[in-house]
Image 1: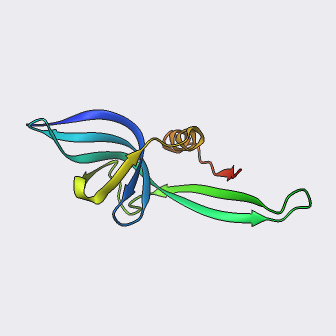
Image 2 (image 1 turned 30 degrees about the vertical axis):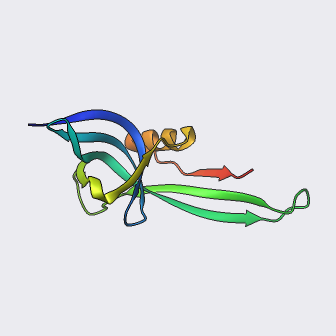
Image 3 (image 1 turned 30 degrees about the horizontal axis):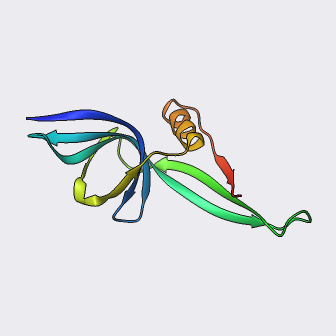
Length: 115
């Protein structure tokens, strides 16, 4: 018997090199994790820009946007095998908030400044 265990909003680095943010649940069979269910998965797209200014040598910013992970589907839940997930980590709070707003119908884009 398989059951889904609630994990939470996670960033997944996939073997393909993609970074996906999703509400991730473990798919468990006979007390072993055999895969993951990604609910409302979005691909995280980052673009780095460097702005020169008089006050400092440079001001590095990262533009972050989210796009549906598999754009041509209406499915909200997708099964991912364990061997395709390199790692799962907690997203920074601002990215988590951006994801929650996206899932709840508020479109948003975010800029992060590197220190």
